[in-house]
Length: 210
Image 1 (tube, rainbow, N blue to C red):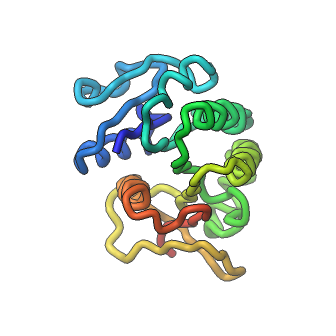
Image 2: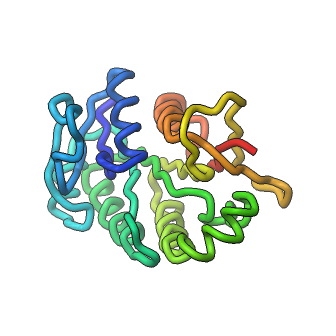
C-alpha cells in the first residue's frame, strides 16, 4: 500500500515506518524536521511541512491508500494539536477520496480511562497527561463521526523491550479490564497488521498486557 504516516519521526511513528518498509509498503512522511528520520530518509518520500497546514496536508494525502496518524504532543500538559490536525486531515482525506485511517491515541482516551493500572491511573494521568487526553477525546469523536474507514488504537503504557506474553486486544472494555504495558514494537506490528487485515474497522481497540 501507499501509506502516509503523520508523526513519522516520533517514538511510535518511526517504528511504524520501519515496519511498513519491512513489509514492502511505500511510505510518505509529513514532518517538520526531516533530519530526525535519520538513515530511513533515503527510503521514503518526505514532505517537509506541518500537520496544521492545510496545503501541506493536502499534498501529503493525495494519492495515498491509507493514513496512519501517530503524532505526539511532546512535553506539554495541554494541547489542541490532536483535534485541530485531525480536522484538517479529515478534510484532506475527503478531498482526495482516501478512506482508510488508523489513529494511535492511548490509554486514557474514551472508555479506556481508568483501565491502565494504579500507577498510570492515579499518578501519571492526573498529573501529566489528563489535559492531553482531553484533546484526544475530541480527536476520537471527530474520527468516529468522519465517515472514513477508521480504526482507533489505544496502547497501554509503553515499556521497553518486547513482551513475552500474548497481546490482549479489547474492543468492549469491562470494569475489570486493566492493561498496564506494551512495547512500541508491538504497537507498530499491530498497526500494520490492522491495515493489512481490516479486523477492527469502525472500532476502538485497547491493546497491551495485564
